[in-house]
Image (cartoon, rainbow, N blue to C red; front, side):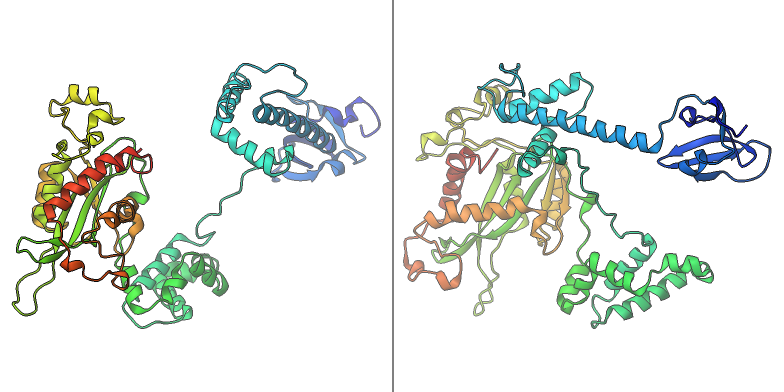
Amino acid sequence: MAGSGKGRLAGSLSIGARVHWQEREWEVVAWQGAQVTLVPQDGGQEVPRAVSYRWLVGAEDFAVLSGGAAPAVPAALGGERRQAGREEEAALWQARMVEIDTGLAPGRSQHARGFGPETTLAQRCAAMSARLAAEGVRCCAHTLADKRRKWKAAGENPVVLLLPGPRKGRPGGFTDPRCLAAMQEVVARRAHASDVTIDVVREEVEDLLRSRYGDEFDDPAAAAALLPSRSTFYLRMKESGLADALGQPTRVRAALASTPPLPHGGREVVLRPGQVTQTDTTPLRILARGDDGRPTATEMTSLIDVANHSVCALMITPSRPRDAESKQAGQATRAIDLTLMLAHAFAPWPVMPGWDPLSAAAASSLPFGALRAADERFTEATAARPVIRPELIVYDQGSPYVSEHFTEVCDRLRIARRPARKKTPTDKPLAEHFFTTLAHRFSQHVTHGWQGRSRKRRGRGIDRMPLYTIAELQQMAQEWVALEYQQTRRGAA
């Protein structure tokens, strides 16, 4: 049976084939690369064996007894065919990229539909995406644009089009999640204590794990899997940022420990106006004339929509510290001011006397006809600011925002509230950025009362100028929003 003949040909070897090898009968159950997995067919209890293809077919007693369902390809021949297939795929993608980049396919003298000289790059990517979809290949226009960008950066080398994307490392590597949680817990527990080294943290983590999972430490293999080695522990502390937090001053460590995690596991996708809004209060750095005729500092609270960056409402209030001599209480933004700001958000702004006619909604890009048909309060004298009903407000953790009055008003209006993390301005970036825009495009243009960006840059004699009242500053800020901020793409989408 081991001699030459048709039964000995390896070309008919395939999954499910029965072969004779080492004086026994086997069945081919798997074939991956150069490894062939065989299962004995003589009723023995032996486990499957993985052998080299060359060793198998080169044996003296090897023979194919019966073929399988589909012929398999030897390893060397399969590698050549795969290489040829990759070259054909690269050439195909090269032609697609050339047609997207120039609008003309290689070897063609006429532009295909959707690739003419008048089309843009985005339109050609969309046309190529539609063509691939008709061929059964799913590749969106954004992916094609990214492929073209990489292709151009590599000198139009088609090889980069076949390279797989970068693999994202798993957070924490292969360290047990329970150990990672214990590391977070120990570092947070030491936030208010004196600083220690990572060795002390590792000892406390080990004690914590032993108290919770003591049974696993009886097995050396399970203990090693639960608590990594010293070098790996140092690496996980550095990767997670716990090592940096451990080296911070006590005040910083205490602030980090008191910061709650970002709700919902990350930033949500905003699909409509009013779904998520952000509010914050900041000094306006403009002196105003108070009710008693004395100069007073001011601060502004704004409500910004995340979907289109529109200003839903703003409120300017006096800000004066407590008088040391008379012991008179100071003034600042209160819960009633936040309530009035919400009231402004629920109603259209009227165009006040003296405003520029271009600040009217009828003169802006807003769909004034549709707005007037939906709400009769939209008239020719309505300012160019959309009415957006807030559904969720991301607020700072100042006392007015957590007051019982503001909470009750939000509950009555069915407005959800979500606190931003302490000392984390990135949780409400639009509100923070709006104040910078306000200072550059509005505040510094108020010649009577502008105090500069800091005390070192403050002008002299500002308190002796003819200052505006709080109401006048409020009207000026609202006109600026309607006339300039809402009319620019940077201000509102």
